[in-house]
Image 1 (cartoon, helix red, strand yellow):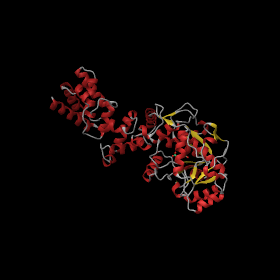
Image 2 (cartoon, protein in one colour):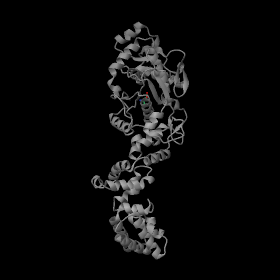
Image 3 (spheres, protein in one colour):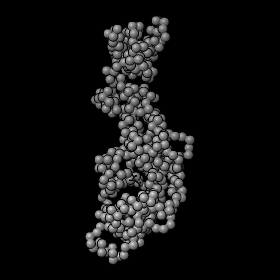
Image 4 (tube, helix red, strand yellow):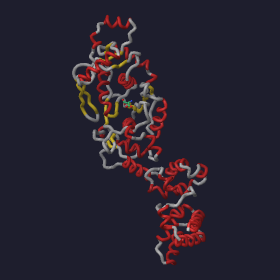
Length: 481
Ligand code: GLU
């Protein structure tokens, strides 16, 4: 085990947006660092020029910032470290694990074809390993540009994974992979080893799709005589149908969840439980609780299934933990973006917004539900739910609405009790159930057949608005019939 100070990293490749799997790896590393007063740093693995795109960098940073996975220190860009890699390559070339390979593309293709014909996986033949010093020098002098390969040692490689325990791979299963291209640039595994060592990374926690890389990297660490970090590989995140999450199957990146009104607290809480278990009988945790509880002994190997429904349940719980004011802060831009109100209108009506979210909070599974469930508080141009309209908006309904509007208008105070008393009196006088009045009233003032308690809703809307909306509904019914 490493005795070095705790320093961990997340190393996304900017070949796409931030995926939930990478977000979870970032989270585990972040929690581990914060729990141990260590450092959590960010490295962008942008050396794959064919697939890396600068336009993915900002969205990745934005998604990490949204989740508040704040990194320490400056971001490390692999693309800016070629000198460092060259130094280490020099050093590597001096070891007995490195050799130059001059095989042409055609030769390698022929080997590959042969392997296919023999029904075995391609493994480089080591043809260039037998070149003499003189032969190599002659080729170099002739201007040939070789790649550098690692000579995989005999035997097996074993390491202690903090998630899975001791893992072993027979080295003969690995080929002498290329560590530097003919232009001198190093390949992925070499860069990662140099970076993790140079950056002082003590622990590498990542998805178990990297286990083969880990064995290759350990061989490089040993060749370069560098101290190994501690490795831990968490299981891949699966969909409920047990397929691996992937863009190809229509999966979303983290930013999309943000746009859909998922709270970052809910996202990190949910992600934290995909491959980690705090061993206590609770599911809902704040960021600080996760930091306090996080321990690598809770990382496990069981399938981690990402279920949008479950995420919504977590989101609901985290919404309920927020104050009305906090929810209003989150709701305001969503309402503005949806076009139901404007920033300026809300600015002078903050108390109103706070009351609206207070009224609807128990119905919000996503913050964006505020638009569908509460748009009518801000937008007067709502339409009536057609099914409810067919049921409630008839001549008798119009009469009741008209009578109730008059009584509401006459109230000196528009409080819950007074509103309720006015409605109850009307029901008693007409000898009808209160529901007969409640339903058309709700429809008239909100356009909807469901919603929060009617009296509370009316009070928040306010006397003038309620009366106007009821009169407008009466007119609407008359015009329609
Ligand atoms: N760039 C790699 C990825 O995005 C990171 C692998 C690692 O953490 O070492 O999967």
